[in-house]
Length: 389
Ligand SMILES: Nc1ncnc2c1ncn2[C@@H]1O[C@H](COP(=O)(O)OP(=O)(O)OP(=O)(O)O)[C@@H](O)[C@H]1O
Ligand SMILES: Nc1nc2c(ncn2[C@@H]2O[C@H](COP(=O)(O)OP(=O)(O)O)[C@@H](O)[C@H]2O)c(=O)[nH]1
Image (cartoon, protein in one colour):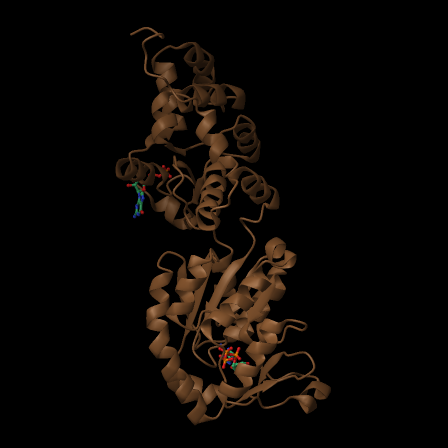
């Protein structure tokens, strides 16, 4: 079959460009916003969306029962990520907003804000420039499934949802020790998080609604609602045990919100297996290749085959094999390039082992555009290596 009738081959650079520049995710996010907002004229909307470039700012929801620490964790995350923290209290405290004044009145009278009023307040806040540019964290919102569904319909899509959980008995006990600094709004605890400064200690206040009875009532309300809220976030939800030190909860939450979810983008695995001799690279490479249909590329094997085939590169490699000296990087890279550019590696992906062996080789590989998107390092105690058969 000559070149004019051969099937069209996608050049390897195309999928790699798309992957390196997140083109698929970019288009997917823009399409999502287009379908949600349905602008009269899509073109200016798309231009504005792309120029805003805020697909990767934090968009986080933190849920949890009373005293689980969601406000504490949300405040720490907001500081660490330099993003905006939105809670019912902060939304209704907004000045010069008739909506907020109306919400405050409801909150003072009934200790709650009607769903639609809260959603409109939140929508108003999320449209502000700082939320668009630096993202947001919703602390304890949504409180009901109706709110969750309305938020989704309005196109307010979180990228990460964290649900804290802890036994009710722990939370009732814990809430009794809650204290708030009226000046900074910081949250402390008489046992778990007591400020060292006596000046702060002296001004701490006991917030309302932390008695055993009130916490138990809030817990009942929370359990009734949360089971209907969480199914709204099947693929972006992480439940974290809050019955552990606050700092541990924080770092688990931070690690999660800093991971990006797998998109629907086509993905060609390019796996690099590194590790000392005998660490099992060849075995794991064979298993990975078999399980995922990847091409198993063993650098040492490639060089041996080149010599055995007496190819152009084989003749260059032969003398180094005979002298038992290292084959120069440029020759190794040429043999590797020839293999990795073959259609099967481009289409199915590869698992490479035995190269690179040092930083220079790694730089050469990177400079030629062979960028693995999964890197696995196998370690082994030296003693075990010498015991291998
Ligand atoms: N992991 C933790 N271990 C011990 N104490 C904690 C932990 N997380 C929070 N606390 C303490 O528990 C109290 C309640 O924390 P916080 O107000 O953040 O919880 P919350 O879920 O926002 O509660 P609420 O919904 O009632 O506002 C605070 O005194 C806080 O210092
Ligand atoms: N016990 C044990 N042996 C292994 C494991 N993986 C590989 N081996 C054995 O260790 C030896 C070296 O494995 P190999 O895959 O060639 O290591 P490489 O040098 O890193 O490629 C072989 O005899 C393997 O059967 C493992 O996970 N556990």
